[in-house]
Amino acid sequence: MLDLLFYNGKIVTLNKKNEIFTSIGMSKGKILHLGKDDDIFSVSSKKKIDLKGKTLIPGFNDTHIHMLNLALVSSTFQMKTINSIENLIYLSKKELDKKKYSISNWLFGRGWNQEIFKEKRFLEKKDLDKISTTIPIFYIRVCGHIATANSLALSKILTLEKSKHLLQYIDISTGILKETAVKLCYDAMDKPSQEQVEELIKIGQNELLKYGVTSIGSDDLLSLPGKDRKLIFSAYRNLVLKKELKIRVSEQSVLQNIDELKEFLKENGNTKDDTWFRTNILKILQDGSLGARTASLIEGYSDDLNNYGLKIHNEEELYELMKLAHISGLQIAIHCIGDESAKTIINLLIKINSLYPRKDVRHGIVHAQILNEDILKKMNENSIMAYIQPIFIDSDMDIIYERIGKERSQYSYIWNTMKKRGIKILGGSDAPVVSHNIMENIHCAITRNKVSEKNSSPFLENEKLSVLDSVKLFTSEAAYSTFEENKKGTLELGKFADMIILSEDIFSIPINKIKNTSILKTIVNGEIVFTNK
Image (cartoon, rainbow, N blue to C red):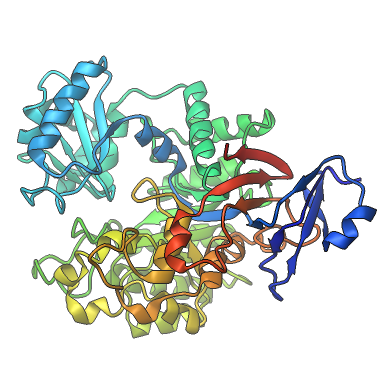
């Protein structure tokens, strides 16, 4: 007997034949029935739900997100829409009046963007000191690669032993911190308890379930004050034991040096077979962002010719990190926005796999924004995947020509080209940097345009993806990224019963309406975990 049966719907399996059924049944967390409505009278089920013609597809898999940081940022000062430094100062003062902040309870937020400030400049220490000099204030730019501290917060950060090794990323005169120095705030702030971390995980997963996300690749280890790997892992595993983790998590563990990686391997091993929480991916940060001009480029920025961006690791450090991860059986996912960092990483991946061959290696580049012909060729020949974020189009299309010029822009976010070249592309959101709404991500993949589409035309229109291919970015292709294509990503017998019911049939409605499609129900492991009331 089935536990649950849906019928009278459009069941889009996304399997190799793209088969469509009208009923689907599940039991003990697995799909055990796919058929037509004529069959359901002979199928026994504890519960039957009429879909009333609605479309049901596999649950979304966001292959690159920061779920804990999404939860943390959602509870802090919001600034993504603030359009001037003057207004930010005014609203921050009002925020101080609303809540009880103190020397140990910082005023913290993420989301400022100089591109929308009327002043058209970075936020500086002098600005934040106008808000308060007795409360530590730390505001992170929308991209997460640049932050600004007021004088008190900066003084606390500079007392840290770690800061002495990162002074090249800290401008004491302006209070601006870049790249790895940004995360120093979490060393200076008070660490949460495990109970608080578990609550943040539940806040994050509940928010994602609203948008049909049933699996994630999450970069969490630098997301909270304390940056305590053991604490975060313990919180996740305790929720698994209590059966309160309702989303499948592949942790993309950021380990910043060889000693951290050795400790990680000793503590965790390679837990790629866990159903709910896996720790088999090493995440490496190699450069920054285009908006902050810290992405590492072969040629200088068009609007700052002597600036080539930042390289976080030298080649020797990278090689040792990547080699140990590779021979230990871990997957490697490396943040590369610029073509210089992508070139370096790809050459090292090729070298390591030639010296220490592994079958079916699925290493990848996170973002893979600015490429060139040589990079494309090597990615294809060496099966190097690309974790892409379609919604980056929404913000970057306004600045890309200014940053890198029209010629290099022709190799930016070239998803259709990558697909045609045989490169595996996997969908992610990178929230809270940008929106975690997967429908908005799919919209950008299909249209190559802003979510609003107001006063804008498509960016590199020939790089559009079809609706079907855009959905597969977040389903079947995403499952491949973690060697789980035989467990999830499509609706097939024996696979996890992870699926979503849509308010509209996104395969038949006008494409500009897809972004407004909502999730009616989210089902994980055969359990209805979200209902849109």
